[in-house]
Length: 164
Image (cartoon, rainbow, N blue to C red; front, side):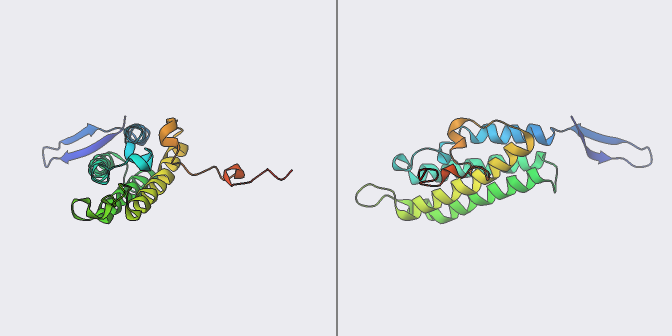
């Protein structure tokens, strides 16, 4: 486990430090936390806009704490910042008390909610994929649903391979 300088003395010379988790450990904590956040993978038809905003705020606070543990300027810190920005923009899109995400008269989520949720999931999915690849972390099946398809596998395209 690496150490972080937390203080230095003067003429009597003293140095204070603390143990800090490495980036791999932080990456595992971030992915483990996101694997339990249904806002990222629950089916849209059963989502509640206000619940999703509250969950997004919880994730933002968690990511801010993890950012303090990651090495500054490295790819993990960059990915954590990108995810935090995606959650912040989702919350901003909701408006005050998630008014922009309220269900319409038929009880279905609004288009604004569906679009913002899709954008959030795709942006976070990309960062999770980058982190999981870099630190060789397995991602649980439900969270893996939001990961982008592998670049070398075009089978996700509709109709690919059917014309043989």
